[in-house]
Length: 156
Image (cartoon, rainbow, N blue to C red; front, side, top):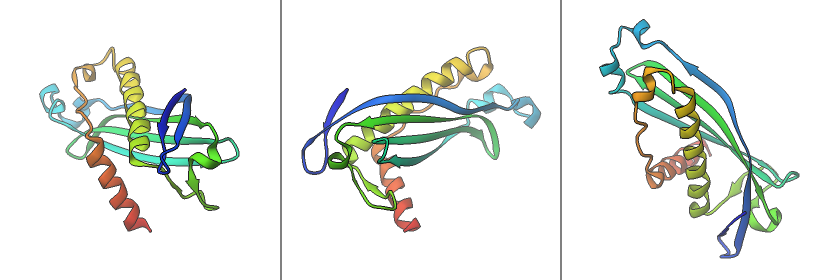
């Protein structure tokens, strides 16, 4: 069980309950008229959603990674990472609509764990394919969090 602090500077204890692959796909880059050199110049799209379950005292992160070249999706994965929160009601600030507030430090930690776990799944799933040559770029969590917050403000 990992301990970190919430906005009231009280420790938050949590444990990873579940890591699961929801969906994985691979497209044949040759079908798009691409070479492996083209593929290696692709880019990564990342999406994340959250689900709060106060009755289970959990928060789940749904992570979606798509590796693309121009408009062509080459491979991708969707995963879920469920965390059990000790003393949930005091550790997580949330309302009846399941809107919640978690300090950036904790959110970055949960995202980092989820991204690392998903990278590991991709290594296994792409092991016997030329896509195994692709190096998934580092994800700057400060920038990612900033973009996530801006997206949330627009949605509100």
